[in-house]
Image (cartoon, rainbow, N blue to C red; front, side):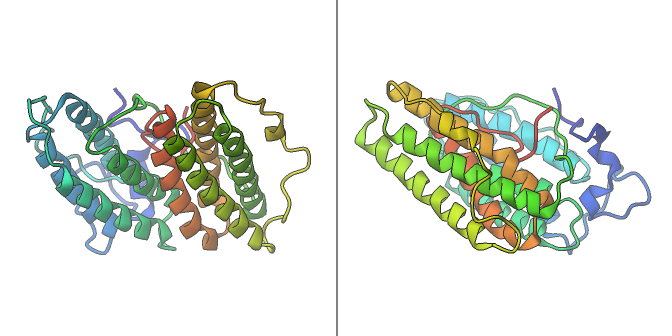
Length: 301
C-alpha cells in the first residue's frame, strides 16, 4: 500500500514543504495548520468530508469499490500536499441493495477540481503539476459516477517529470496531440463499433484537434509542424471494435504524462489549456478500457 509514501524523484513528498505552499521550516507531517490563503488545502479537506459521507451511505458493489479506491488516493493527496492525514479513520464502504445518489459527491469533486486548478495556476505554487493532476483526477472520478465502470490503477510510486526546456515541452505536447488525432482517426474507423462509440470517438477527435490547433498557434514557443518522421503514422489499421477501443485508450493514456510534463516545464500561459485537456483525457481513457489513474499526468515509477 502506497498511502503515506508518495514519492517525487525518490524523495518523500512530506519532506518537500507542501509543494511550495507551506513554510519550509519544521516537519509538515506534524499537524500543520492549513494556510487559509491556499484554496487547494481547503478544497482537499472538503473533498475528504464528501468522500467520507458518500462512503458511509448505501452503495452498490461498484460504487463501494470506487469509493474505497478514491479514499486511498485521497490519503496520498494529503501526503503530497503536506497536510496532516485526517484524524478519523476512513470508512470502509460496503455494498447495499440500493445504489446511492452520489450527486453531492459529484458537486464536491467539481468544486475541488476548480480549487485545485486555481492552485495549479497560482504563480507562487512550486509544483503546479501536483495540483493539476489532482484536478484531473477529480474530473475522471466524477465521470465514473454513478455506475463506476472500468479498472482502476493500483497503488504506485509517483515522481515529478524530468526537467525540460519550455520550447521542447510545448513541442512535445503538440506532438502528443498530433499522435492522439491520428490514433483516434484510426480507432474511429474500426469495424464493429456502435454508432454511439463512433460519435464519442469523433467528439474526442474534435477536442484533440482543437488542442493541436491551439498549441500550434503558440508559434513563439512551438513549431507549427510536428517533429519530423512522426512515429504514430506506423499505427496499423485496427481489425475490429475491440482493437479500436484499445487503440483509443492507448494513444490517450500515452499523452497524459506528456501533457503533465508540459504543465510542469512548459510556458505558464499554456497551463489552463493543458489542465483542461489533462482532465478530459484522464476521464476518457477508462471509457475505452484503460485505467482510471491515481495521478494523471505524473510519470509512474
